[in-house]
Length: 439
Image 1 (cartoon, rainbow, N blue to C red):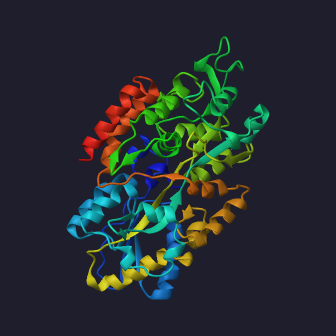
Image 2 (tube, rainbow, N blue to C red):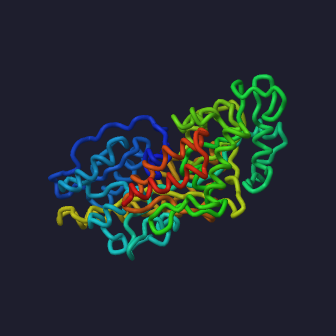
Image 3 (spheres, rainbow, N blue to C red):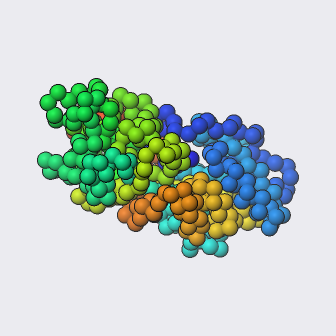
């Protein structure tokens, strides 16, 4: 499945070293001398078979052949600017929100409003909004994800906890999330945080995955507490409400002791996912990018489900992000008609149905989404909470240098989670460092 770092903003999005098995290396240069062959670049090996099926049908319909250029995520954003500069960029390629603006501002992307005229009213609105800038749309929605709450039904039922009712309030002495997470956290002797003799170093089960995860934890909690993440392409998260929410998250780790150590989750965000699949974490807030990981990891070990993400004083606000297919505005003239046809196909229900049928991700065309829901329903998994989460959202990162800003801010976020600095001291520094990096 697609990992957070693939869908939102790279390594800086989570501060982790990776969640997906290594992708295959690039198949070589993007260019082709065949005037009836197009190139399509992507970074996810898991999605490649679905696109192969889709593009085979496209070739049969249009006569245009398409060569898939698979470039590993670790190399993608290093290789792409070089290929664009040298004129060797693919005719169509995957793009994320934290990187697209720099290519759009330099005139390298086709304006989709001028390129695709069919089926655009079926595209997921939140993704269209994310890639709309300067009066145009700069990518065709392909995949998207939102945030909800995976829960271990065996643990929550035994504790008498309804995951659908969880909420947080940093201004209150306690709240349903803290109360539930305390009950769901136990040490080797069966004691809970706050009990006399509770041994934090021998915890056998954790309540909640509070961690330095931009998409699944930090973004939703700050927005749900009424804080802005950015304003006018500048970070603005170090407000009073942002600091309050951030300290709340860090306290779940270091004061309430209901979340795994940040020393572990800072090193790899997958630690909490793996604890969940092992039955050692009761509540795991994440996205559909982890559906396959969870389903495969849990197997028949215990019953689990998906509830709404944890709500705050301002509601439950999900970060919704998506991958788009962009058109190379500087491709050879002989390819331009083919690029238009390919982008139209990639945005259609027919073009995206293989993505849904193979359970890869929620497709960007809403007409194909039921097939993805049906795929998981057949496996006994109800994914509708991810759809519900798109109805109340907070923006993902945009801006020409968003990745640079996140890269500068994430290490300071991690220091807050590990307890070496407070949110009041660290968050303004993270905001300043991020904004300086984006200048």
